[in-house]
Image 1 (tube, rainbow, N blue to C red):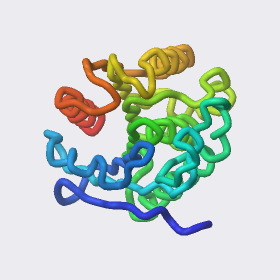
Image 2: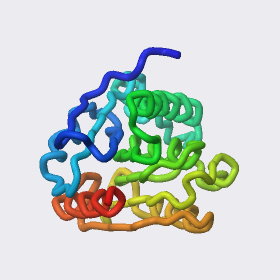
Image 3: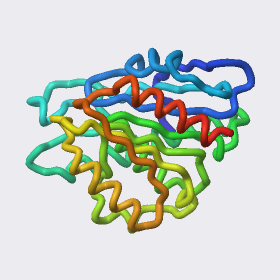
Length: 218
């Protein structure tokens, strides 16, 4: 197996109740969501792992190289499938590392923003062991029409938190709603939130994330 992704790792206290592996969006890096951790009013200490995506050329940005979990080609929306599978495998290796270090898979949550959310859902829905939760922020399901062909129902009862901006110019909320409906059609449990914002995170969303994390790590 290739080397593990570079990560920033932090914990909010001793003896964390679980681990949240949180993937950034296109062009960002592992530092993107680390500042949010102190803003979360958590009832129990949690460990947070923020991995860096590999640097790759991105078609939608003129082939410019940047951190990206997969290529985005507006002329071929499903073209990133191979990259997505590879990235999901790299995050699965981080899950395995947590398990090797004594964290039960059932206490691991996968989280991601935008591209990172695509990876969180791709891996979380296909993972063969039950996870604690899946957090999908300002994102969508890759190839939602074929979702049923790649899921593993180990996580059919796992709580999924989806949040999106009503005026998101990068990923229209309709795309997120379509993804939510595909999940509901397969009997997944989705907690849905929408906010008066664009492609970003807002204070109310941070409060709602904390409340959700508290509810699943009771």
